[in-house]
Length: 141
Image (cartoon, rainbow, N blue to C red; front, side):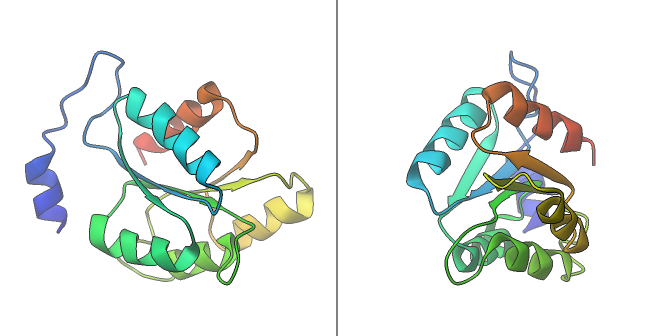
């Protein structure tokens, strides 16, 4: 699948400087957040896949092999911490950066995110600049 991804995406930069080959997964139970993030990222030239819960996210990770994952913490059934931990415990995806999205900005929540392997913590509501900065920070990872 990674070979297919490499073949289908030549790594051409668009006019905004975004790496067109960068595939980003956005996981959030809020359709508004998913649509907003997807719009911001696709406008910047990224290939975006979305999922509305942790279970769907795990399926999409396996199917699309994203380069970066944004995951909401507070989701029903399989929350963001659990989703991140499952992704990071898989040797194939361990190095894939995971950015936690949440309205909770406490130190405990950030620490818990680090424990399960998250690479960054982005507080909602986020701006387009914050979202794109997070992508740029992990694009080279």
